[in-house]
Amino acid sequence: MRLTTLLDTVNQGGSGPWPPASTPADADVQFDALVAGLIPCRSNDPELWFAERTAEVEQAKAMCRTCPLLEGCLAGAVERQEPWGVWGGEVFVAGQVVAVKRGRGRPRKDASPAA
Figure 1: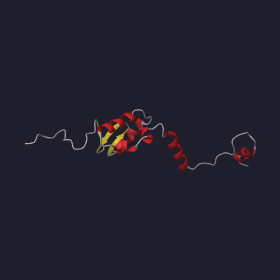
Figure 2 (figure 1 turned 180 degrees about the horizontal axis):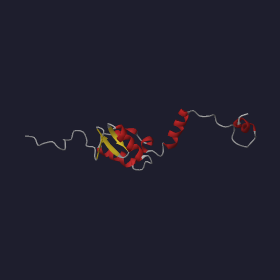
Figure 3 (figure 1 turned 180 degrees about the vertical axis):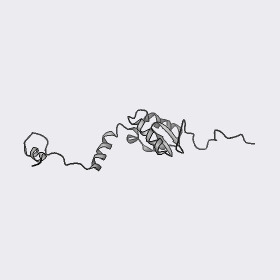
Figure 4 (figure 1 turned 90 degrees about the vertical axis):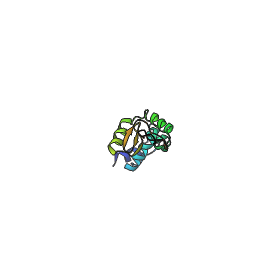
């Protein structure tokens, strides 16, 4: 006889039988739900981490600084050469970390003056 079956038959004053064994997919869903409140990119609008406006990008970077997975996220993004977005508190543009994301329609930093 299985131990769980034996324990189900004994009146322990608990709330009922043992929960069914979960599958790996169920475990992933449970883990995601458990940590969603701790990870800013899971508990806020995901579009914020891929925003075009500098203020929104800076807001995402600030939220990343509170994340317990900051170092792992940044290391993974560098390894994958993420094409763009905020990863591990850093801004990626064309697979490279940049200090500040420049908004659309602005002139290049190295543009020569018009002749």
